[in-house]
Structures are given as C-alpha cells and as structure tokens.
Image (cartoon, rainbow, N blue to C red; front, side, top):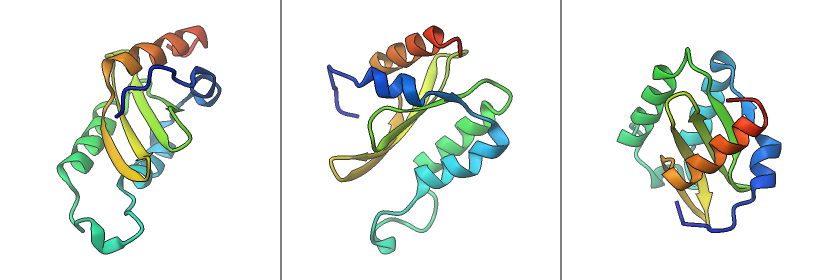
Length: 118
C-alpha cells in the first residue's frame, strides 16, 4: 500500500461501520478475491493471501471488526481489540491486498475511538 501522507480521514470516518460477521464475510471474500478483468489473469486456486484473509475473518468472527473505505477503491477491515487489519482493492489500476500498515492502523483506530466504535 503506497505511503500517502494526506489520508482522506473524512472518507474513512464517513464510511466506517461495524461488520456483522455472517452478513459481511461473503461480501468481504468476494471483494478481496474477485478476479481482475481477465479471469485467466489470476490462478483459479486461492492464493496464500486469499487463505490468510479467510483465516483472519474466521479468527475474528467473535470480535468486533470494523470496515471503512481508505480510498474510493481500497477497503480496510480491522480489529481495534488486537490492533491489526487487512486491506484490499485497486490502487492506480493494480489489484492488491495485504496487512494494514501501522501508520494507517493508528489513524483508523483513532477515528473508530472518536466515533465510539472501539
């Protein structure tokens, strides 16, 4: 995830919501695992990242998970309780996903506290 000194904290705060595990899991998985424009461009088998994200959601199904849009095309799922998160989306036309960097985690956790969600 590119280092962006000026984050859109208004977007993050406006879009931040608590996830209901049963309702959100299929949507998050679809968002994170969706194929790029050409279905043959990515492996048909789940990648290690796909498996990691699935495990992350499973490990946190009894915890409070929050979702927000970091940018218009990058979504964030994070756990304020254990201070970690994941992100996925498209950045400058390239699909990516990964572990949420510490500098972004601090910002989303601060916003979650301000909103009374953490």
